[in-house]
Image (cartoon, one colour):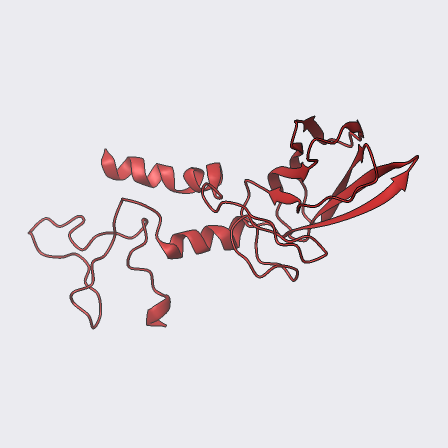
Length: 199
C-alpha cells in the first residue's frame, strides 16, 4: 500500500545518495515531486515503528482504605505488554498532609509538601507491582494520580490516549507530557545511522 510507505523516514536514502554521475539513484513511483530521506528528525512512521516494537501497556489502579484512623493508599501498576516498562513514576497529591509510611517492594518514594513521588526502575512484561502509602487523616485525595514512564505506553482499554499517558481504573485520566517518551532506545536504534551519514 503506497500510503504506508514512509519516504520521510530518517532511515530512507535520499534520491541522490551514492550517485556517481549526478543522476538520481532512486526515484519515487508515480509522484516525481516527493522528497525522499532526511537526517533532521524521526518521521511519524519512525516513531510509530519504535512504539510498536518497544512500547509497554501500563495501567494504574488505586484503592483507599482506613487503617487506624488514617488513609492507606494502595497503588498497583500493571504492564500488560510482553515488553518491559522502565523508569515508572507515580505522583500522589497529598496537599500538605503528612506521610506516615511508605512500603518498599522495590519502589523508592520521596515526600514533598504537595506530593509523594514513587519510582520503580523497571516493570517486567505481564506483571504488576504495588506500592502502599499511608497518609495522615481521613480526607480523600481531591486530585488525580499521575503515572509516567520513560518507555512509550501503548493505548489501553482504560484510556484512549497516546505516548506516556495512562488512566486510573476509575477513569480519571492522567496528564503527562509526550516529550521524551522514546528515550535511549530510539537513540540506540537510529544513532549509528545518523553518525554514519555525517561521517
